[in-house]
Image 1 (cartoon, rainbow, N blue to C red):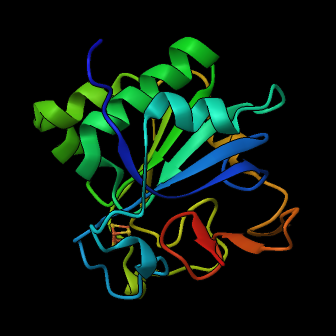
Image 2 (cartoon, rainbow, N blue to C red):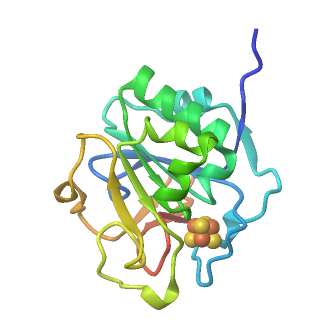
Length: 193
Ligand code: SF4
């Protein structure tokens, strides 16, 4: 049996209402060296192993029938492009989930590099660009700074779908752990314990 690639995962929120349209699984990749000043997810920067999981297991273990899609953030998802590609493919082809990816790279850069561009065909919405503290705007829709741009790569969504019920969400897990996620003073969808 072929070896299945694993992703170094920072964390997973099985169900969120504010990281894109509908209820969504949110997967935060571990590892980013882009060093955006003011990044609100510094815990995701180290490349040390957080926990390793195959793309198929990430979805299988967190999937419920009422979710509409998967949102992938980080960390920098494209720094694990093999795993990202597989996760997107499984999400779309095996679970019919819509796909949103947040990245610090710019769309043009991703299109010009083959190992990155192969992922783009599986993405419905790409939100690109480094977080820039100088361009921070607290009322922005689904992003942290004005330079970050929506790229609708399929017909599944339009900007009108991104009006979500709020910018921050607090989730209390069964074990009492409190998770905050959202777009308050942040670069990308946040998970903070
Ligand atoms: S904003 Fe994104 S790309 Fe920039 S340092 Fe933070 S995780 Fe990395």
